[in-house]
Image (cartoon, rainbow, N blue to C red; front, top):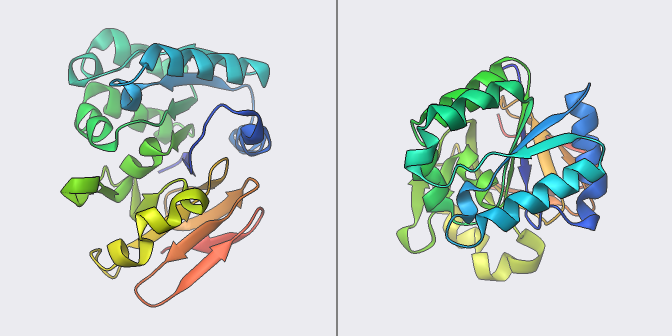
Length: 227
């Protein structure tokens, strides 16, 4: 994969995310054209989520537009998938992980996202968006679900610092295969890389990597491997 994956711990489009997102835009290089996909927020207020994203990235001097993919039907609509080729950064908002997973799985929009990555673009997922990108995705009452596998060998729990006890990371980690690293990512913080297993942390929080035998936390500017 030629592009960049960024796994964000949540609370996107807020002022404390600015240092993180400026760093991600710098890693992308060149003029950023950002497509905001509020798919995960379909059961909440996807229009508001999309508008917040457009306003936020416009404030960072990036061109940003909403692409209102909210379910499997719109994810397979050529009018939604086709224009994604005009962007070099696709942003998946937070919301419902299971809804996002199944709405985009095998869809025309997912193929368009893969094409953006192959051309060297960036895919950013916040909270539910980050969760869906891994090999496995926590489905709450449904346990671990099959993720998209864009970030192989990884599973994500967002909002880690504020919800670590509720997540029970050590417990749910035991239900993963040994080769899958569970990443607990704090809000306004991201782990980004090429999807091949080397990650860099950016933002004010930490990324905590849970393996079968170790727990290690990493801060802004540090790199780690899940390969």
